[in-house]
Amino acid sequence: MASLFSLNSRPQTLLRLASAANRSLYRRNFHLTTAARQITDDDLFSSAATSGPSVSEATRSTTTKAARDAATRREQQFYELVEYVTDRTGRKRAVKAGQVRQTAWLRLFQLANSSGQLEMVAELFPRWRDSGKEFRPIHAEAFVRRCEELKCPTLALKVFGDHSKYSLGLTSLFAARHIMHSLYSKYPLADSMTVAALFGVYKLPPVTSDLAACSMLYAACLKDNSTNARVVGKALYEELKKHMQYKPPVKAPMESVIRARYSEKPDIWLLDALKTIEKVHKKTGKEWKWLRYWTTEREWRPRNTFAPSQQHA
Image 1 (cartoon, rainbow, N blue to C red):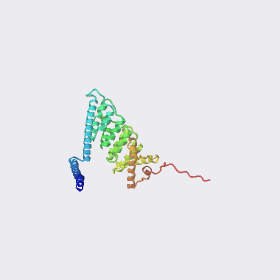
Image 2 (cartoon, rainbow, N blue to C red):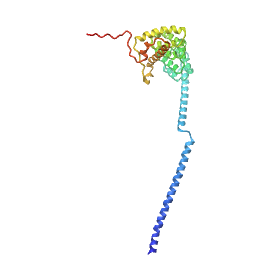
Image 3 (cartoon, rainbow, N blue to C red):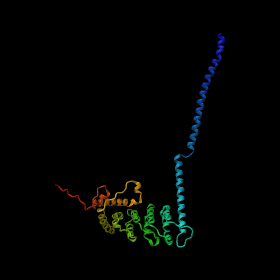
């Protein structure tokens, strides 16, 4: 019986041993397979990471290429439009078909990307006059604005100072203030004086009657030590002080979106010039308190107002 029992139980024992062996082998194979897969994955990703440029470098390269392509297209459009305008303006048009619209000049101003290109556009102005056409105030404003953006305000002064050649008139008070703004703080006083003279040439209101223009011209005189600057500055000082004492102060907008509007610029330029004047007056010992209602948030009252005395019963 014992012999028979041991024979009958042997297959079960062998089965248990075989099962245990298989589990051990499976665990070893699983660990080996996992390790091998990890090594393979590490090799794969490390290879991919070192084989090419980083994401930031690729993005930067793409951005640079896009900017370069955009600049190339812009320059191509500029010269194509210059050729189009040249061929279709002047006393004898090279190309009869097609008309040059007023907006073509505004487009040329924007496409010009350097002072040299903008001067090239200015040299086309006489052809517009020879075609029997006239520029509008919006062209003067856009031209002055682009001259300031491209840091060549003296080009605007040159063009407006020679109307017989260029035929672009300084017929906009906004444009006249703008060219004064672009010149008075960084260029010689003579340039600002020329702008002041152009106010009269183009029948604009006198400089002394416009607070923005008057304050900028006076600020230009303060930074010049010549006798002429002192004489002109004294006259401007009297006019500026007189006007400011009887007018309520303006406030520049704080929001950047509103400040960017062209209609808000004269007030911003005025207040900037007044702050410069106040600073110089304080430094040199000149009277400055009449400026504080404009340069600070103080409550303003006209000079001839007074608080009536209270009647007591």
